[in-house]
View 1 (cartoon, rainbow, N blue to C red):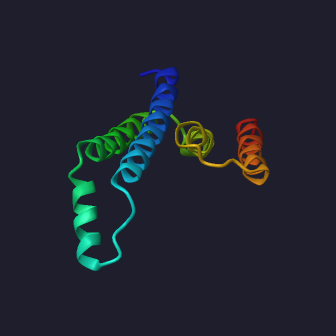
View 2 (cartoon, rainbow, N blue to C red):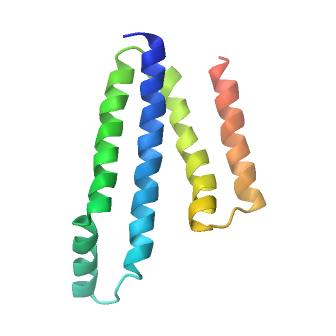
Length: 124
C-alpha cells in the first residue's frame, strides 16, 4: 500500500468520524429532551441505542477505527494524528450549517488556531 492510500485512509477516518457525530446529533435532536426521571432516562437512552441511525453512527466509528489502523501501517503517528484535529473544524462548521448552531467569533478564532497549528505542525 502506498503512502497516498494511507493518507486517503486518514481522510476516510476523519469523514466517518464527522458523519457519525452528525448522525448522533440529528437523532438526539429528533428524540427530544432527556426525561427528568431515572426510568425515563434509561428508556430514552435505550431507544437511542437501538435507533438504526445511531447504530449506523457506531458502525461509522468502527469503520473509522479500521481505516485508522490501515493508515498506521504506513504513516508515522506523529504525522497523521494531528490531521484528526480537522474533525473539530468540520464539526463546528457542519454543526452551524446542518443544525444552525451558533458560531461565535471566539469559536472561529479557535478553529483558526487549530488550522494554524496543523499548518505549522505539518511543516516540521
